[in-house]
Image 1 (tube, rainbow, N blue to C red):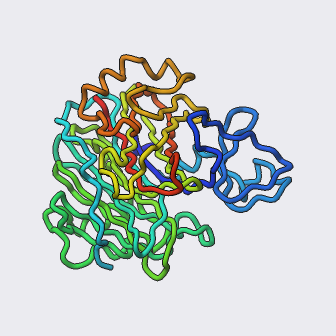
Image 2: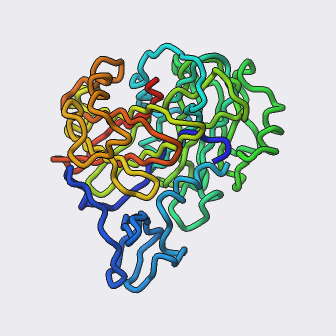
Length: 379
């Protein structure tokens, strides 16, 4: 991952067995069939996800059927009209910018289902100065036809006031008329075309914007189909170190017993304290359809759980990786802007060395609910 240091993504996972704090990915069994998007773990504790319906006898080295979960995460680094729902950008805490450090959080991506009635909404916060950011919507062009990915997405970028500053249909054309010329220059399209962030499909979306510090929202919709998977991504377009960072990401999605939310973080350049949150009814109030009792599982790059959180004030369940978590972190979390409003919501601070980590978010006691998953630089 040359340019991205943190990314967040949602995958649709059919895993009804992941309903309790005693989270365990089932061991792969060659004699069993599997449904699409199913997680298994091999004898070396490596986690795989099924890419389609798998008949019995298909081995894990059959790339048509299986892929390592960490490789799915790595693939995200390859570089009409607004929805009625309001973006959930309030989850971004009012943190003061801090000086740049060797380990920084600089990019995110999110995989989710988008429908004509349920757009994907991702909020990005920039601190410390102006930063060139590239937004992408990856679909069938990147991931291939027949996999359920959106064939013709649309991307709308808004500022903190909710005002659209750019709308992109097909990335090679650039933004539609009416973009904010203080944030976008036509020369950026040439830069994008010649970069690692150029898209594979002409109908996918991408744009480079020069953004001053503040909060921005990416809204992703579908055209010509009622429902499809899409990946929305935001990366630091510049390769050099800068005090202007992508501070964090807060994304709204629906979690069910069969469709878990998965957030991935990769850190390079040193060890970094990262806070993960699952915001639900405690933050957004009862009666709004938000999850009342989520569960959060953090795994390492091999898919091995390193921490499980049910109620955030209790800290992680027994069996956490003590090299990544110290009980004193709970006090730090409680006294910070990242403390949760509801006792059943999830949050944890982990001190993560370079590497890839994954957060899996599930529901307990309800079949389907909205949740906001967030990952922020805690320092």
